[in-house]
Image 1: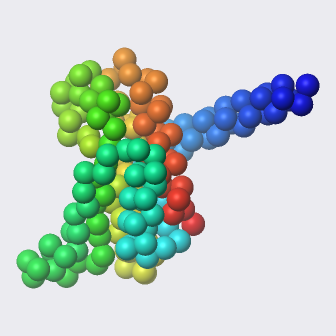
Image 2 (image 1 turned 120 degrees about the horizontal axis):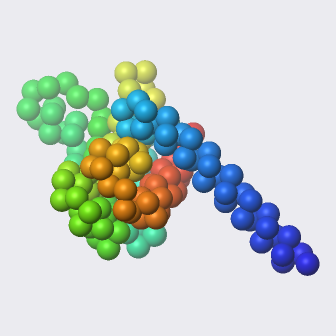
Length: 159
């Protein structure tokens, strides 16, 4: 009986969490498709934690671009900003098979940056917004899975 109660409770919790995530993703999709998570760590530590989370989940890490380093070397004054790129080719390329232009949004990219006030954020494009942008309606399960993964990855730094 306890196992059944725990299973029901777990299912209810998962349903509630999914519904809440869909509301926040829906709000992002209504605005500009950008989801921003405030980090409790520095840019370097945020990037390290995201990379570790990606690797722990068996996701391919494609690389990190230090935008501030490149910009500062070019003579621009750029606050700390790094672009982390990762993905699961089996999952990500299903979006490309639905619409080749979805390749503009894959691999997944998380921008980790420091705001003027010193706060650090991790930002990414909402998968519901990506689906809408590329008019992909045949991959709902895959987009939901990708949304769960990106939320889990960024939860490791969330304030």
